[in-house]
Image (tube, rainbow, N blue to C red; front, side, top):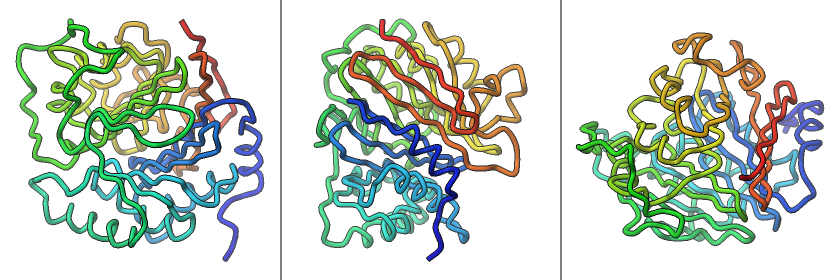
Length: 338
């Protein structure tokens, strides 16, 4: 088999690997899907989703490239946030090259309007697991990774039953009524995770819809404030409601949009007007948002077609500081704790 990565790219990734006591997060470009590789200070690894299944194995190659460059030969955990093809559809292929030890998901698919296609994604995923360990989580569960706490805040269309120690505040941005956008969509089943590494806090809700965002944040914010918000659902406006983003008060947001998917201007307006927001980083330039609403070029990993599959890396420290790096141009910015 030919090598799946170019030496120059490998050197760039390897040169950014930290030997310190850090949590390292690689936001892989799957051009409108989702894939994130994590390496903990204890050396444990987790893959969150795996992008699209394609004939040319585009997303497989990009994930394997990252994993090999940072020394991952086997993922300790592979987590499927939900069962849309751009999240779970490629897990079985990645698993043949870098196998998982433990698989994490929210169990059976929730009732959906597109139940047939979801079942077609779900069954190959379950078959690929075979007799290996599978954990189906519910809100309030904590993933068993060492050196940090990862709390499940949403799963299977449900949310936390009580506030986390950092949450419980009345949400001043809560609307009078729950959004009407349908819950009967597999995106509503997304596993949402709060990552806590010392004082650093990151929230990733995958493709959670605004109706379930409401259940998590209204009338009380069950999560509290965060440092980093992984923008939901590729930046689509059916997610990322103002009552969510503004109540979270993130310093930084990272949007895993594609060149032709996500990055809605309405979403960027909400994020940029969030109290305390310093910067938005994007995997792709979003044409429909225009120059005025897109991030500056240094904060965008992929500027134009043909896409080069560049990624964004986060290095978080226990004191709450974190550094975001655009691996297209090595532009970095460090955000200090409060």
